[in-house]
Amino acid sequence: MSINLGRHRTSCRRSPRRSERARLEMAPVSVRSVLISESVDPCCRQILEGHGIRVTEKANLSREELMGEMKNHDGLVVRSATKVTADIINAAGNLKIIGRAGTGVDNVDVDAATKKGIIVMNTPSGNTISAAELTCALLMSLSRHVPQAAMSMRAGNWDRKKFMGAELYGKVLGIIGLGRIGKEVATRMQSFGMKTIGYDPITPPEVSAGWGVEQMSLEQLWPQCDYITVHTPLMPSTAGLLGDATFAKCKRGVKVVNCARGGIIDEAALFRALESGQCGGAGLDVFVEEPPKDRSLVNHPNVISCPHLGASTKEAQARCGQDIALQIVDMVKGKGLVGAVNAQVLVSAFSPESHQWIKLGEAIGAVLQSCTISKQPFSQVQITTRGDCLKHSTGYIASAVMVGLLTSGSSGCPNLVNALALAKESGVKVNQHHDQSEGAVHGLCDVEISVNGSSYKASGSVQAGVPVLLELSGNVFRQPVSLSGNLLFIRASASPQLLPSLTGLLAAAGVEMESFSAPAARAGDLWYCVGLSALLQDLGALKPLVKEAAQLAI
Image 1 (cartoon, rainbow, N blue to C red):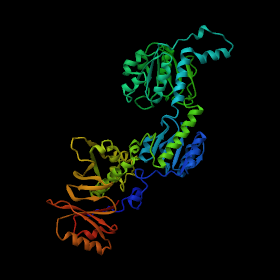
Image 2 (image 1 turned 120 degrees about the vertical axis):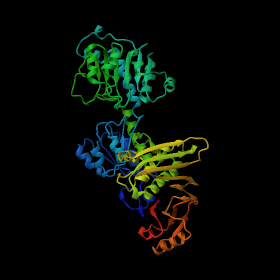
Image 3 (image 1 turned 90 degrees about the vertical axis):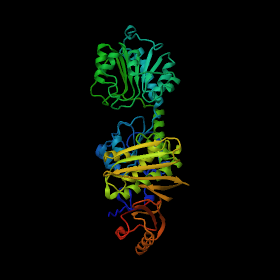
Image 4 (image 1 turned 90 degrees about the horizontal axis):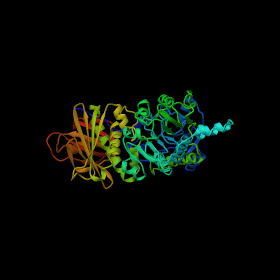
């Protein structure tokens, strides 16, 4: 016989009822204080303080100073200079949001933030126009040698022949990365009569064709381009994207521009291509190391370099500061989530209709965790949703299930942001599936977990806005069990004496039975669900009646 104590299941080992927990999925995120660690437009502070959020501005903090400061704040707003490393994230006890006032988050350890359940967001459209315009300026400057000619004039020279240029009209521009900035660059350079071709693994070709860019593979693109500009994030697949092998496939004299991230173009390979003439010129706004200690590219006569000016316009700074502040305010008020790079699952979770399904997923996970706690750890979880209403909901329901399964365990403090990452870290394989078969039950969630070679399953749904349990380990309840309040699950043999005996034991413990849910008759032991007025202090009193028992407050 095993008696499983699953009472007071809460995150972070505290013991209020589950409904009282500060959960990302069920309530607006509580952000009372934000640290701004860099120079951000004043409107950012004004918007945050206008919505009751306390703001502290401290720039140029050392790593140690930032670690100490983060213990006092729920949110952090940065630009690109602050390096939000794992040790800084781990030192922040209450941090819930890291906001990057700009595009990209490569100065933030997103994996470390995700494991801590911290939302990381940026402002993807804040500096779009500014970055696109600088890209176009560099393309034009490369074609006509404008900076070099201006410096020559300042030196007292008049070298018309030395700065012979080329028209952009009729030339081919290759755009790597067809997101917001790539699109704006394309439409602007088309006005100069350039042919725009591009590559993007995400943007559909029919979409980019709508704004005049023909998509093709990189192997097809390289040899056609007179100019190449990159607009991708820096990640393993894009690091060194333009290197020795790539330049060898390009036209001799190709000109390249990088206003995205240093490292997308291999700097050593670029220098070699410039020296050999394979590359005719480069416009660089970003470098691997900023400011660059190696000045070979900066000093090269065919390179136009800028000190990372892509977002350095008054308009972009105001827009980014405003956007990050409004995004934080919307998140805090539960209106929505924009710009999250590690919590896409939460985007749908802010819609009212999703809340009931998130409650269901977490409750099912909690039931299974409680009923199998003595048999832990579980190694595999299969989550299946059914019905058209859940066609696009499997992701956040799966995260909610894992919150319920991992809470009260040793996997940190799970929430919708980090639950799947914590499961993976713990060696738990999570499979998600939506049953699209015709005639699938409307709005149903099945969860099956594997524990030490055995399988346990629970099925639930939402009825009249209330999460209900329909089946537990092959036991189909005669009436749906409302997943709320204090619940006691017991496995026992079917007997006419079970109910009166159980009522007597509960009464002796000073606990009232509020409901009793029995499954349909079947062979073997059965699982029952009992609604209680309060949780039992000692489940051992049930030993004479039951084979297994578990309780939890939902």
